[in-house]
Length: 150
Image (cartoon, rainbow, N blue to C red; front, side, top):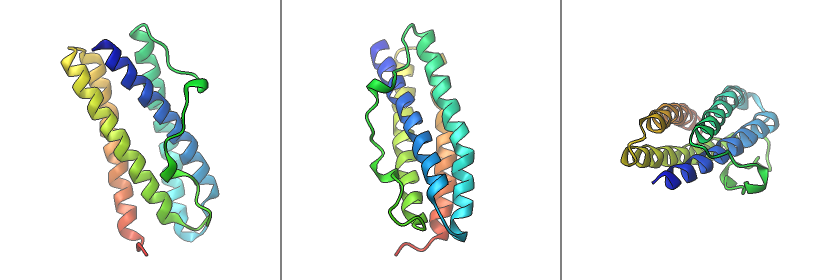
């Protein structure tokens, strides 16, 4: 069970860092008046996602494991790649929603694994981050309602 927890923590750590990269890139490349609010939200979320990675890395260290380095990284967020059309805010919103859904699923798995392993510290960490990810999803669902899906 400890191996499962370590594995999920490592996966989540890498996912958070990939999210930072994609949020940063999209916050830079998006253009247009309609993009400003989404860009600002992405910029704010970058620091939060980076904090999540740091918390996960520290938990791995506490469990006598280490966070993975870049050699272990494999990109997964294809829906969150910067759009060809820099005014395509909708594709970025949809990509963020996909990434948040994936994160929510990961942290729910971590909550369950930690509960089964009687690891309340990891469970508490997962619940805390899960709440942040659900808040991001809610914010971007709001953006999605504002932008017509053509």
